Length: 452
Image (tube, rainbow, N blue to C red; front, side):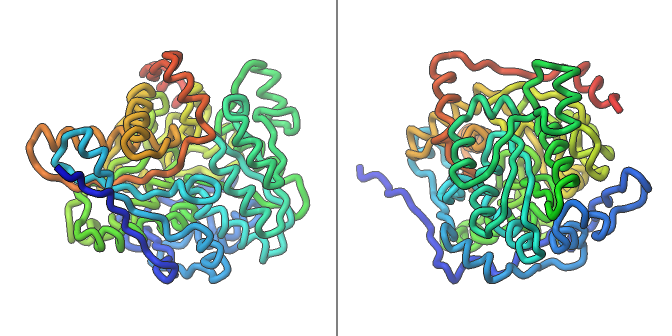
């Protein structure tokens, strides 16, 4: 019997979106505003100017314009790798013996190997045209740091990256990529900031968290002349930029002649989940379909599935505004799992509101299940996925097997947010049987939620 050829759905450069989609303009229940920690008043755009570029600050608080123009300079830079392919995973379908149709948006084809470049380029651009000469940021597994390093070099800006210490040690090639593109990379917590020195003094063996790295990056930005801070997830303007993923996928699903029954993305702070889901979610908001949207988070950092919805800081030391989010508490110390990009205590305010309103779902995935899914995907589709992306693949497999059990066809779309070619040490440990599952106890969660 002749096997069906794998199908790719490709767009041309003219199909790259000209505008980003701002879902907050069409949400019936708008996300609550961020709160200034000093005045306790809702944040205005100008309150963010000391940290972020002015245009990014305006995008952050914009809840009126559903469509925001992509600068032509940024769109030209997108052409380096966009549009990205949509692929039907026919070999994975066969391996699962499922009636489901599985599609994935392949964001791993970007120069930095992940979706993060979709927001790194506009963030670097807006800072450049405002005369900023230096940027600081944090990175977990290193995808965001490598993306911003590339973007900063593209627009001639100096960059300092605080990389979570455990990832700094586990993922040396991501560090090398950042340095190749000219960034300075510092293991966090470090001795270069007041925040880092205090943490090292209090907890000498602490392996770091995204919350700690954010605190250090913001502290350096505030103290350095002509310097701003850039963030790769969580915030509204980041989710906005990532909608190029879903807007392209929408056209490609039309080419395939199908519409997804379920859309899946792995979840750390919300950037790639927002990117793949928001353009499709706008149809659900107005009642045009009943598509399901599933955020796949690690069981070791379950802010959506077991966290609390409240105002919390986005960083460990309390430098950020208070954000309305599902959170495990800003002092939460996540386990040292290999999906470093998902080791974040909170969720973006937009995703948090959507979950609160039951417009999206969230599930947790244990580490060993995620790597098992990643191995199967690599063996069938030929791409080694990033440890973060394996969580989305695991949930896609769950959905496909459920379709098989029920005997019903289903169309599944997930975002392959990045490849794992610089994460092979994690696969080495999995294949050697050295990785374990880790789940947080209710007592631990309540302890961190109660910490001020």
